[in-house]
Length: 243
Image 1 (cartoon, one colour):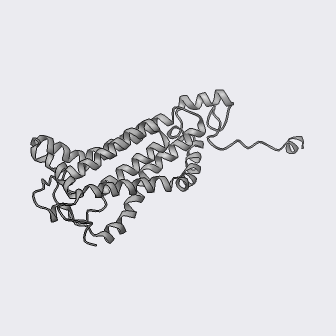
Image 2 (cartoon, one colour):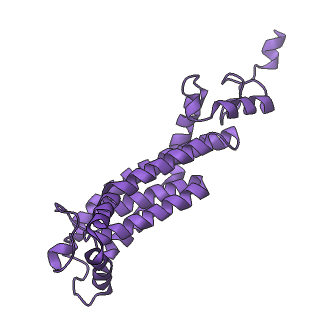
């Protein structure tokens, strides 16, 4: 399939020219900033958002919430990777050329793009991470979703994607992140719980201050003054004590 309507009268193409046309009137320094932002900057910012959300969930809420939260935040970047894998056959099936190959007069700010256009990898990854973070932490999640929307805008601004490439990426990233969350948490939560039981790696799941608070509220457990995260303590059988 060569490409999802390439006629210039198509609203998709019209919106492409409207957004990309902003680059022609912008100063060169702004275009260079948008180039870095669209290619690398927003993805770096999303990684920082995930780290900030991790820092927050390990310090607040209950011990079980911390386990679930960390597991969910681990899933966010993994969801982006899974969505990229799903996108490989989609791109091969649609085979939509980059917009600058079929439409003249575009201000292309990123060169060397030779792969297919639909759907946008950047938009897919950004929205998968944004949706994954939103499941765990609403405040950081809203910020991540805002960054994902900005990523989509920059891809069209740079002249390397149609708006529908971006919308398709948003849909794919969201679908993967949300639909596979139950399975991902079922696999990741026991792993995070096991990490929380270790003396050296427990701070990755629960901060020291939070573990001390857990211990004060629930008694001494397996993590040096705290109860085990997410898994109840085993108690000796009364009959064995009597023996």
